[in-house]
Length: 373
Image (cartoon, rainbow, N blue to C red; front, side, top):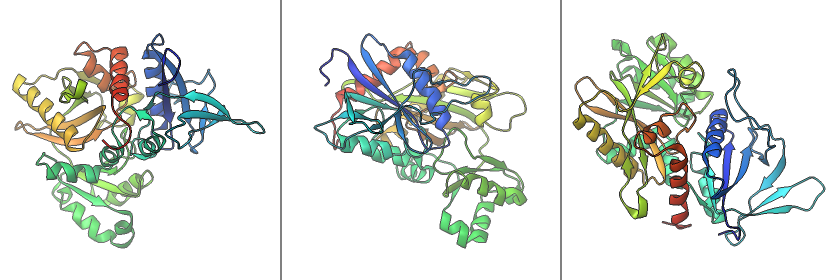
């Protein structure tokens, strides 16, 4: 622990993925909610080119008039020593001796997508012997990769929908075979498919395809974000989300009340614009469902969390079909916590407001050991 009276929390945001801006918005909301009487906050921005910086105090961390925030790389460059005995951040100024910024007690890695949510920063922090909020390396990596995520859930007997994985080499060398495989999901019979980057979030790079002629272009759009693509058969049903928190004092994980995503207007699905820019969605917490169905989705959400060996927090997304089945869609091991995000709203419905939620995440991370667990 640091020698000062306050717990020192490094909030890491930005990053190299296409979800850079949403990470910034999440960080802005989290830092506004942290109890400054208990915690000393060290903001750390990661620019799109991967540089770590101590950003200027006037950095904008909110969406304003449709403009997305960004870590530009301005500010002192930072380094984290890979030494469990020396957990202090180092500020690096050109022509000057590196200056230590002191030890960090815990890190909030508020990064979404590749190069952050996928286990990469978690591995770096494990090497440095620093505690952090959220899932470890393996759970983060599996949770980020929708293909492996579904394989693990299937192995645990959990319900997932039909899908086809399209790897980079397969697409370049066996394109026709993969297209034929995708058609078997039902596209030829009129069932739409969703073409997605396998390792991205915030609905980036997703296309709803109803015509075979549009399939190749949709795969190429997804490949702009990730060379590995997943294609999922459209599932008729309501979109339901559920938050999960690691249990206190080694107790079982806890699920929030679920939320139903209600997309308004002419939007075909819950895409980036409907989530963050045009206010076209609302959420019902809890959804208009029988109590037994709500308890069932909460139970499966905890099972999905435990199946991946998650820690800290996660948001689990479902489809609820007209015949009453629950189908797992995906898990986010570092869900967005922007002012419009479902995760903090679902927990607020339990009486756990945003500041209390952030405090719980930090305290949970501080109680766990570093190294193998």
